[in-house]
Structure formats: structure tokens, C-alpha cells
Length: 287
Image (cartoon, rainbow, N blue to C red; front, side, top):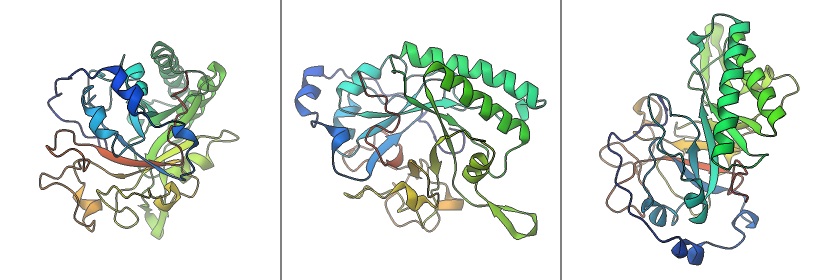
């Protein structure tokens, strides 16, 4: 993502790991564990098959793109769903939303939403994500969104619902200042303009506090600690560290500014760190 999901310029070569290894190592009934929150990661570039053996030591789920991520021309995650699932991971499924300046008016925004929803549905089916999977639309803009953007979101939601999929949003959980001393959360703005639509919310807030910084606590923090009480997932650390927000975060980031899993001793895969109320936030790991 342009502001939050920063990619490596080099995609590491994938080293094949036999699927039988993951069949032996996958914890049984992952989604039924009594834990209340689970750590996950996301990154724009697929890390390669070999990475998942290492990353599974810290994470229960991974982000998974159905479209090229913001700023990218290609999507390297495609055709990897079965392998990732066999490695014991749940999914946080993502699709890149548009910038608000692409909309001429509400009618134009709705037409573009129909096109994007159709592409989302086609990609989800091609990747074998079952009906009921939540797809989170990546929204990079913070603060109050335009009326056209809300029209885009409502149409996108409705089209996904008609197809049997569910709609979520990835958006800012950081307070944005407005004239007159007013502050607003993008998540609150989306929720207030959704009508009777029930979006799932994946919010980002990498400011410390409430974020613990680049950290991997045994007891994952609750998404509600993000400052958005209705969030199902929270991205609390980004790579590279955004100094303007994460300036007060405790040590944990690598000297190069990125965040790495403690199991990644060679600092091979920079990533963003998430927490969710589910080990499968999109409900996409089902057969």
C-alpha cells in the first residue's frame, strides 16, 4: 500500500517446501483455539514459499492480494492460495481501492465500483476463495471521505453481497484534524455513511501508543485497542516505520527502519504486523 504496505524492490526467489511438511506441522483446529486475538502479517510482495515455514512461528494469518497492491503493476500473490493454506495460515484478503481524485461525481464513482467489484469477484473465484469470504478494500486516504467515495463504497459493498462475498475496508484508525478543532476517524466516517451495510473493518494505527510498535507479544493485542472499538483487525506496525507516527514507539524496528519477524534472523522479509479477533480474518481458509 502506498502509505502503509511498503514493498521490497526485490522479490526473493521461492524455495519449494514439500506440502507434507506443513501437513505435519499445522496445528489442529487453528480457528477454534480459545485465544481471543491472533498475530498476522501483510506485505505487498509474495515472500516465496520458503518464507512460510519461518513466518508460521509467529503468525496465524497473512494478507493476500486479489489485485496489484497500491503502487505495484503486478500481483505476485496470485495462484498461491492452496500452498499458503496448506502451510497453516488463515487469510486477510485484500483488493486495491481507488483514489478519490478518480471520481468525477457519485454516478461515476458507482460505475467504477461496479467494475472493481466485478474484478474482485472474478479474482476471488479464480483463487478458490469460497462464498462468504470477506474482501477488504484498501483505502489509502485518511480523514473524511467525499460523497463520491462513499457512493463507491456502497456500490462495491452491494455488488459483493449479491455475489455471495462479504465486504470489508482497510482504512485509517488515526485521528485526523479538521477545522475548528474537530477530529475524525476515517473508519467512523465510513461507518456513518454506510446506511444499513455492515462493513468489516481492518484499521491501521501505528502510533505509539496505542501501538506496541514492531513487537510480537505472545498475547496478541485486541483490535479494539487500536482506538476503533468495532475493528476486527488492526495493523499496528508498518515497514518501513513511519517516523511521523511511530516516533514514540519502543525499540523493535530494525536499524534500516523495517519490521521483521523474530524468527527471520536474516531480515529477509520486511512486513507489516497485524492482529485480529480470528486466525482467519477473511474466513477464506475453508475448503
